[in-house]
Amino acid sequence: MKAKTKSISVIVVAHKRKQFLLEAVNSVLKQSFNKNLYEIIVVKNFRDFAIDKILANEKVENFYTKKSGLMEKFYLGMKHSSGDIICFLEDDDLFDSKKLNTVNNLFRKNKNLVFYHNNSIDVDANLKRIQIKRRQTPKRLIIQSNINDSLLKKLLFYGSDVNNSSITIRKSKYIDHLINLRSLVTFADSAMFFLALAMNKELIIDNKKLTLWRRHQSSSMNINNNLKGYFDAKSVFKKNSIYGVETFLKYVKDTFPHSSLVIKYCEIYKKRWNFSILALRDKRIPLKLFFWRFFDIIKNDNQKWKNLIGLLLRFFSWRLYIKVYHKTMVKLYRKSGVV
Image 1 (cartoon, rainbow, N blue to C red):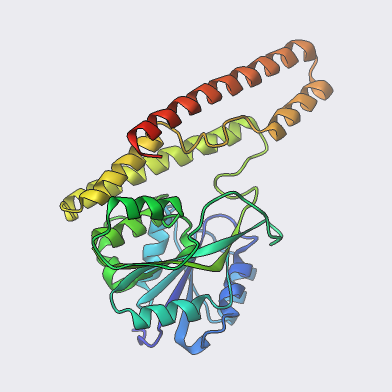
Image 2: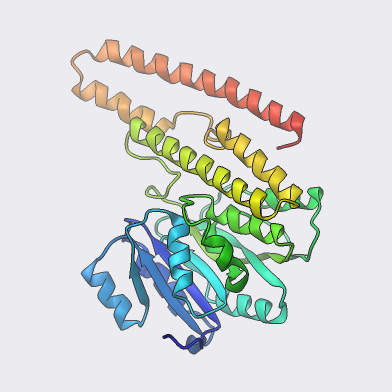
């Protein structure tokens, strides 16, 4: 049985993707925090001799699972962890060198703290900084209990419930809940945020940028190399998200029936996914894919003029459909106070 000597456990998860995993692990190995006080646990659904050998040499615990769900991997890592402070890191993201030192100090000083979320820096596949328009908290927010509607809207506006690699939790407060939520494929980050609110415990939403959030072609919400693949991926993500919200909502209603605010906003999330408003934020077929198909027809298609006209008609009809649909949904939600 493993001696419980570690303060922090970092759980790194990977699904199929291999190319960034060692970079993620190295970002944890290079922390300014005392190496004797934290452990690294990798949970992945593949075996790779070269990667596994490096992890073993670095004394990184390495677990294999056939499960595809994100929460299943998080739970497996937590079950084998010795630390009560749990940091999550997805394989394509990285930690700033001060991450563990920061969370250790905060969790040690605040015994009621159960959930911590830090700001992040957007980078591309080569770790070059990129500009993505999104809101993050401008200052450190400490939420102790009895959150109100106005404050929750502000936290969601700042993205306090997104990006697993920006989240740290207290295991002893979460483990009995997550065992019942292991089937969540997506929605893990939001589930952990809303659980903290449902438990009426302390949260910290920090303005420190301690995570590098990598945006690249193989990430879950980016473009594949063809239209069908792109929209198939969107459809799968949407279905998993709807399932995640519904599963989590049922659990909250059964376990925290008096947490009306959490239930209210989970219901809102469910409606959002069902109406596809999040999946349609881009509002148009990516031009990159349109031109890819356009030049493919020019070069390889015997009935090029007929198919070019069809492509153009589909493109402009889709643009019109998305524009009208998106405006209608945004107007509807703004009227109801959701967005």
